[in-house]
Image (cartoon, rainbow, N blue to C red):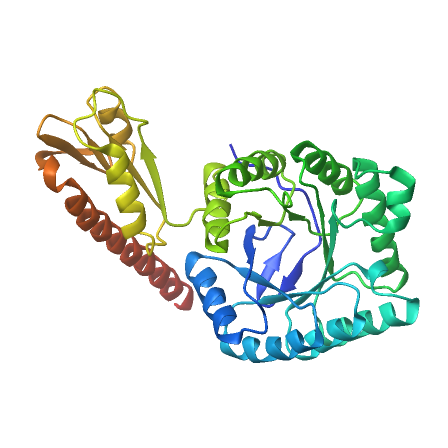
Length: 373
């Protein structure tokens, strides 16, 4: 069943469209010192290789903004400059090529300072992300609500949005994040009903790779399933490359966007005829470079194996000493010896990925040629 997306305005971060039915983009953020230019550039490139559409870079000082200028020249992926409080850093970052500014207008200072940042963004034709976070609500909101409730987050968001509305600037998106999953969900639902700007989804400070992935999958998954959200970031206390991987897993599980291999694997039991866990872990590492959307089923026995394997692009159903091989529903008479199953599967998966890529390119070229006639 296709998800009906919430209607929203479209903006662009670099060449990446956000909102108005555009593919939901996956973002991450560097965790290196921005002033360490080589490390930051390397991490940005790693995130891009993992599939990130956009990368955010923290710019806490004017020195960091100078480093950002050098970084921007060495990468091709759109970069968001993350700025708090100092309007001069926001202006410098825009002048140095930022594709988007992440600021909260009300934290920048007086009206003239806010206007100078907005005017710069307008001149450079770059969007702004208003980023409301339960851990950094403005003092006035904290005094009224005492804790980061749904109502507190929403009021903070609307205050910042009102500033941009007053300055006649509508090239922006909004996030309204909490570390509490249910607060995040309720806040986004209320905000989605009140504005038509694109929404950046995230559960902030979600936690470790395991707990953070679970919280993000629940929070983002429930919102996305209701059509809310135009771009996402999974926040993990882990290598940011993992954020990108989890982000795509969430989108893939909802059939919203596909990238790379979707492994279907059994949890294992005493019926398994080969080491399923080891096989899946090794193949995930070896095949991380494949971006072609594929379903690969690795099932350890003949109970659920044939059914799952026959529905995948590539599938294996465990058998004693040798396992049955399937490709696009076809059960091959040839069986794979279990002691070489990892190498054989890697070879066949890569061969299949190459075939799918060539077919996609052929179909695309054929359509272009037909249009040219």
